Structure formats: structure tokens, C-alpha cells
Image 1 (tube, rainbow, N blue to C red):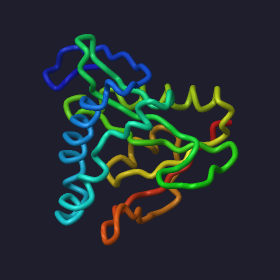
Image 2: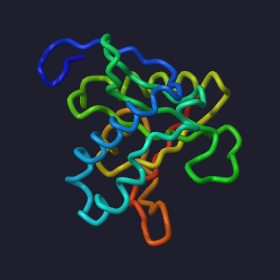
Image 3: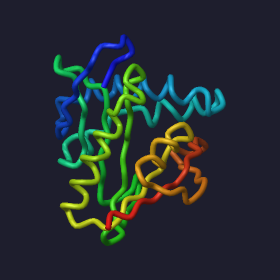
Image 4: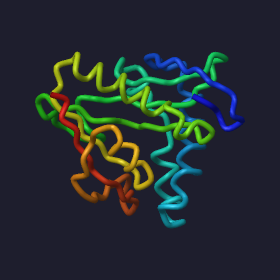
Length: 175
């Protein structure tokens, strides 16, 4: 993998902890603001993105959420899975949901997302899941397609009364 400056960068993918909250917040905010602006109108960038670009303590401490960090400890990617989808009250037996994926802008298309997804797929499979669903941003769809997901269609995610986020639902069988 190489960073924006062209130097080789090795990343370690590890389970996240609550100690990653600040680094996760900074990664999500930086990544989402820069990578989503070409695909979403200013109203979504101003109203919705600040709500989704926040690290979630329950995910960070779940054991199924991961960070990718450089040798010097810089968090350059994050993502994981949960048994329930965002905001869902019920679990669909055997299915998991990809959650809160992001890659540092300087490391996009350098294998960070793929390394995280490999860990997600491995741990979800080990947990007995048979499929993963995903709510993707418009800009991340090519990444998910490269990771064996298929598009199910457009969805609107309600974040707060009057604030929605347009997303794309994807699915990947694990077996």
C-alpha cells in the first residue's frame, strides 16, 4: 500500500476499542466530508453528513468493528459489522450488517478498505453468518461491488425528523 506521498504504508487491522473514539470521529468527518461532496447536494452535506460522520461507542466496543492503522498508530480506516442494521430493532437470523466503513482520503484505493472488509467477512463467517447487508454511500458503491456485493436498490435513511440520507442497499452472501 502507498500513501498519497507515494511511500509504502503497512497497515494493521485490529479490533477497535473506546480509546479509538477521537481518531474514529476525525477519520469519519474528514473522509465523509471530502469523499461525499461530489455525489450529494449541499443540503445533505450540511444536514445529514454531520450526523453520520460520528464514531459510535457501541460499535467501537462491539468486538466486530475494526480500525486500520499505520505503523506509527495513525488510524487510516475503519469498518465492521453488527447483527442488527442501523436503527433496527430486530435481527434477521444469519445476516449481519456492514457498518460505518471509511478510509482516509490519503489512503483511498490503496487496499485499506479491502483489508478491513477481509476482516469483516472472516469474523462474520466465523460467527456463523450467511450474508451481509450494507447501506452504502453513492461514492462507495464501486468499492462494495469489488468486494462481491450486489446492488439491491436506492433507499432513504431517516436520521432525524426532516433529515434523510440517500443511500444504496447492497447484499453479499457469505456461503
